[in-house]
Length: 230
Length: 275
Image 1 (tube, chains in turn green, yellow):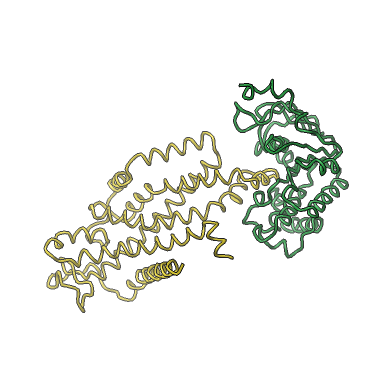
Image 2 (tube, chains in turn cyan, green; image 1 turned 60 degrees about the horizontal axis):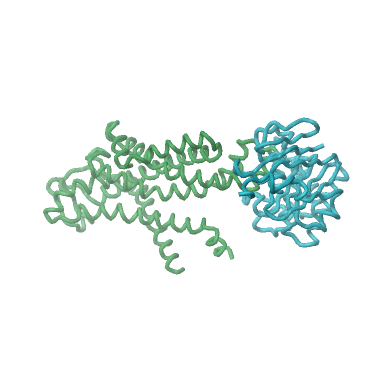
């Protein structure tokens, strides 16, 4: 169970992007978070993945509140979340071949090359990347192919929750369908929970068990926000 | 376009010739660059002395090559030391952030607040004249800009989603720094190092010209220009001209190569080249 309790977060403490938001993802549940661009849903997703420290509120993982964010979070807690971002170009180190990109989380936790290679082969097959593509660097593949690699990288540590932040916003319909199928296969096999952030209501409604609209998360926006009032 | 390639070729040729001369001449012609021949002092350039001789009859061509050797040694070593120090300070400041960043950058400000020739003179004054104090003096005054460049680059890389992805994948601070941040800043740091070589050579010449660098008997381009001042007023132009050219031409050539490298680093230029 993943609970976000009273999260207030942003990049300027006096002017937070997210104010006092509550959201729960049960084990194995798929939750869609629907909102317009720039409303703060990506920030909330980064808080949930322990990548951004909120100014107030807690993230509770299986009943235990998270104590640290980014490097201050224990490795097991960080790797419990698989994150896929909107722009594959920005989320792939331009110097790494796709093979090394996918293997990076395994290498970072000290697993051997052989073990990493076996797991990479398995996942590459699952997301539909050929051997030949695995030897290329990010600038030599398309956005869709790169996003497949980024999804494989997120799945490598066998996360308990997947967080897809506008994962398919830049992609065509067939690639979108393929990536959604990969995520669903993984969830069926592992029982992982899912938080999908997006602005495509039709996709989220079909994909997720329930869809939460951003406006319902933010209580009494006009009253709670002094900067809007002035 | 053609102009750029010509410039690049000319720069490459000069740098290659300089490196070759500096490495081969002392081995191939075991002549003494300090040999004094008072009978042949201040000879005009001619067959036996292509660059002429100086006021105590030493061969200027030989001394120019030996001087260039010293200049290159100082330039390359000082640029390397300054780059390593600057990269370390900049990367630490950018990667750690917070008070460590503020402390390190105030240190950089402190060093920058002193005119760097003055600081360089202060450092050489602490030691007996020689090559190493000059290298130390140039290195101490030249790591600042590299530290600033590297810090800015690290700050910009740090917020990329791929760093988020690495953190989420369980990478330690050390692994993020070594695997993702450092490789990203190395091209910039390397370019800064090459651009620093000409600057370091000019600094060595300046210190020697002021009489604060290398001992006066040692062949150094700065020393040679300094000791030629007297004869220049008497109308003898060659003891000033040739060492001067030996300072200017190689430094322009190194700067030309670095300029071509900088154009390659610019992503828009790079995509032009690969298409």
